[in-house]
Length: 367
Image (cartoon, rainbow, N blue to C red; front, top):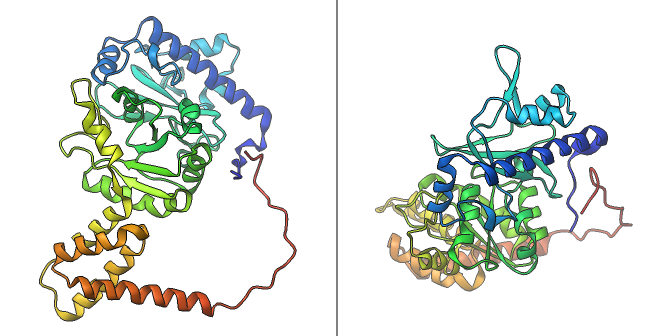
């Protein structure tokens, strides 16, 4: 599989210098976590069932940005980086006085990597707001081209670990705490949107034909999960959704006091993501439709059922018919009609004359 690399690599000398900035910053953040992290950081990691010193998760190389105005800026200056480069990296901002100050302060830090696993920025978990602060978007750092957790678990993914798309880097890291390292690999995207490049990158590094989506059970999370189906279905044979506990913030799917079997079972016994898509479609339909509306409902539900795995379609038909009070025979008939229509359309397409193949092109170096 070929993954095209962004055009940001067109100016190689500048970009290599930027990569050096991020590497130095990660060493700095990692050192602060090992030496003198903020008091809340150790408690936060321990609460999530993780090593409070971060040492057991060295592959992730999480770090800590100290609650000081310009420690990273001074460190980078000592490494001979100019203020222009430091500011361009997004790791510093200009204060009203004109002096550069650290963008990330008192944050638990995660490195962000692109499709070739180069460090291109950071995400910081804040203490007070339980939210994440990102490196600003630029020609070098684009959220839609990055994943968190792939490089850190590249070996596990290559050995067959099932990728699990989760809500935030802490959720990705917390999957290691349930005692099944190597079974699943938590991977976070920025927010809850997935791009074609992110889906292709995940497929490139994962050897498992299964992917699990575990964003949460809130309505916005369910809708975001459903939107991922077309992209993931192009890359993976099996696309499942894990029904996480409704009383749990999806950014913290596991805490040290939890029974780990609850999360393990949610991941292991997830249902097809297409089933969730069907549920969302069903929820749009209120009971008591008139005949014309009911007929339209049958057609729309049938279209969604066809997107579920073939071996799960009969089960989905029975489930939906019970829930909506629809005739299962009529619904099954509508599905068969759609199948025949699609087959007829495919057969009617004119044959395409073969032509000499053209060499594939990409916008940069490829994996």
